[in-house]
Image 1 (cartoon, rainbow, N blue to C red):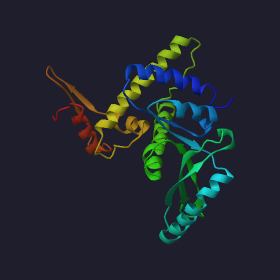
Image 2 (image 1 turned 90 degrees about the horizontal axis):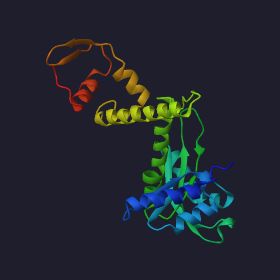
Image 3 (image 1 turned 90 degrees about the vertical axis):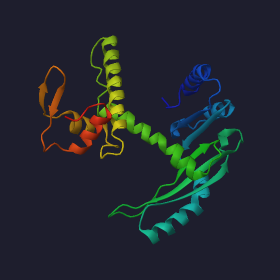
Amino acid sequence: MPASRGTRGLLRRWLARVRGAFPKARFLVRLDGGFATPDILDFLDAAPRLEYVVAMAENSRLAQFAAPAMGEARTMTEASGQTEHVYTEARYAARTWRRRERRVVIAAEVVRLAGRDPRDTPRFGITNLRQSPRVVYEQVSCARGDIENRIKELHDGLQIGRTRCCRFWANQLRVLLTAAAYVLMQELRLRAARTACARAQVTWLRERLLKLGVHVVVSGRRIVRHLPTATPDLHAWRQIALALGARPG
C-alpha cells in the first residue's frame, strides 16, 4: 500500500477542523517524498492560506537542474575538507502534473566523513514558499527530521508501541500514559536549557537525571534529597531542579 493512500482525505478533514478553531491562521504542511503525488500536490495548491514543503526523489531532470550547484559544492569541499552545501532552485513540471510548473528548491550537498570518499547527496523539495532555498531547506524542511527524532524517542525511549494486551482499551491506556510521560519529559528538557542536558534524548534524561540513588530526609516541613558527590552531571541536575521549583538545602 503506498504511503500516500488516504492522505488527501485526512488532510481535508484535519484542515477543516483546525480552520474552524483558528479561522485566521495560516498553515504549514511538511511531507516526505512518499507523498509527492499529483493529487496531494493539487490539493495543497488549492487550499487557502496553506504553505507546504514536500520532499521529492531525484530523477534525471532534477539531476540536470542540480548539476551546476553540485559542481560548485565539490569545488568548495575540496578546498575546505568539510561537508559543503550550495542552494538553488528551479521551475519543474513532471509529466503527471498536467504540465503545471512548481517551484523546486535544491540543496546540493557533498558529505565528507573521516576515512571515506566524499559523497554527493542532492536533495529536492517542492514548495509554494517564497523564502530563499536555504531558508526553506534548513529552517523549514529539516525541522521535519527533528520531529521524526521525537517520534523515535517515543518508540525507543518510552516504548509507546508496547501494546501487547488483548484488550483494546488497556492498550489505549498504555499509549495515553506513555504520551503523558513524554510531555513531562519535554518539560524537563525545556528546563534543561543552557545546561549540558539541553539537547539530551529521553533515554539519557531518564538514566542520568531520574534514576539516581539519594538519601531522603523527611520532616514536617520539607523533604530533602541528599545526592552523592559523585553524581554524574550534578551541576545540570541542580540547575534543572531549581528551574522546576526546588529550593537549595
